[in-house]
Image 1 (cartoon, rainbow, N blue to C red):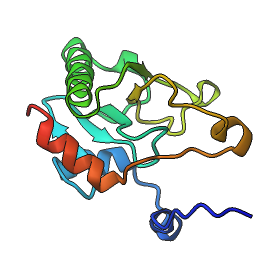
Image 2: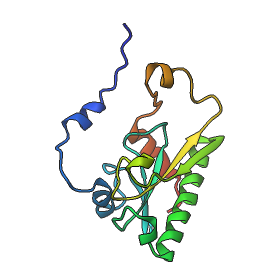
Image 3: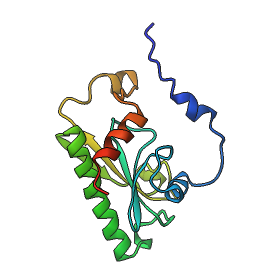
Image 4: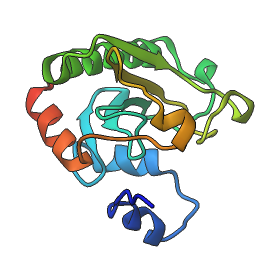
Amino acid sequence: MERLWAPWRMEYMMAPQHDSCFLCEAAEAGVDRNHLVLVKREFCLIMLNRYPYVGGHLMVVPLRHTGELDDLDDAEQLDLLHGVRQARAALRRTSAPEGFNIGMNIGKPAGAGLENHLHIHVVPRWNGDTNFMQPVGELRIISEGLKESYDRLRAAIDC
């Protein structure tokens, strides 16, 4: 039997469970390595996804706690989109992806893991970055640790 070591998962398993919103906590922290916040803009923040699909998986999060895009005013929506552009630019500088998946899952039926605080996923993609491991082994391989990704992106992002 093969073993895949993922010791950083223990942090998740041992973390205290609480009802607060981790995205709101990240917004309160501001630019912070522990919360994985790379940039805090006027109405949104850019942060690493703690449970990424691939290395460099970012989220652009409105500062306002809402699960509905329609709750955001024009200035908040525009800043959110500018945050997506800024996230893509940082990923282009640091990772040279060949494409991106960008999107929102609004509501549980749409796949939202966090229904009450919407966010936009910005996922870098490369030709051949998926293989048999994910569908057959139900396993994702992330080639870089979160703190290393944070440091690399933080150094490259234009604040």
